[in-house]
Amino acid sequence: MDTVAVIDFETTGISPDAGARATEIAAVLVRDGRVVGRYQSLMNAGAWVSPFIEQLTGITNEMVRAAPPAAKVMREVADFVGAHPMVAHNASFDCRFWDAELGRIRRERVQAFACTMLLARRIYPEAPNHKLGTLVEFAGLPVAGRHHRALADAEMAASLLLKLEEQLERRFGLGPITHALLREIQSSSRHAMHECIARHGGRVRRV
DNA sequence: TGCCAGGCCCTCTTTAGGGCCTT
Image (tube, rainbow, N blue to C red; front, side, top):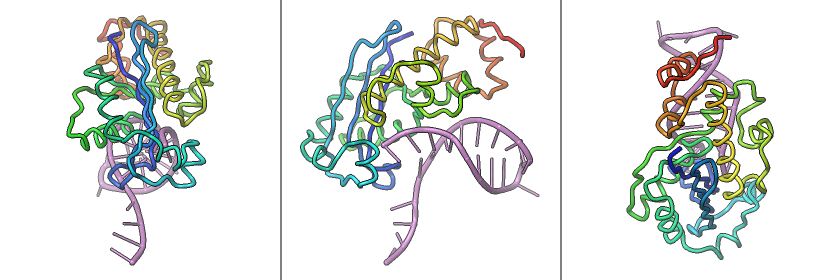
């Protein structure tokens, strides 16, 4: 597949519209089935980290205060990612924070996101649930580090992405798997996915 | 002052509601 950037944010809350800010970001570049680049940094947006989030992520107020300014980190990571298509687990979440934090440095996103959660719902409907950690275990992928730290989660989302591509190739004979095809599959209903696969020359197994 | 998401999916649906997933 074309080079994609898999990203993950740690934040102070669930919605930038409700005042939540990023505390950490990681981006890994994936090309030809492997990780070819990594970026990770804590960032200081001047936001307070609640005890709940400190417990969840292990990222403390002291760590954030000692981190580089959010604007500097966002400029660096935006340059690192460039115009590569992006991927995240539950991409609607990371996309909102990407757009919000980028907007604060007067930059705009130039590429689309694909979502490993939506893809996994299509490809692994039998998984116990579609949380990143559960899918990593379900697919037999290595645990890259502590869950809810940006680089570990981005690495595991990248592994999951590669596994999902492999499944699309092996089960349905699809290939090459482009970012645009992933977006088409993730936004197809379960029924329409077979039509989508057939349209792209894949084998559709009726069960 | 008090409160605070949003997009997707499924179904006991479509004149809607509730669960999932992210922090």
